[in-house]
Figure (cartoon, one colour):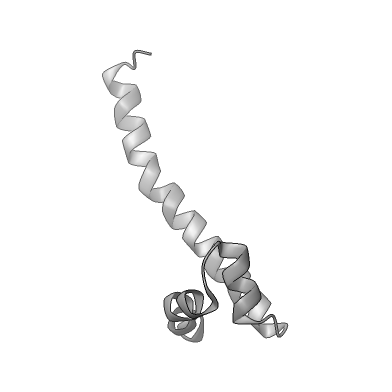
Length: 65
């Protein structure tokens, strides 16, 4: 498939913004989940990782939020 140069620039510019939105949505969901006593084990399962990895990645982020 061929993309015009402007199309590529638009795609490249949108990717970081989309990633930022996705990360913000994940943080908001985890913050809500933890406020509702959802375990790190369950959060890890939903993220496709271990409880320890999820907690290490997001615990300090949600505390700061």
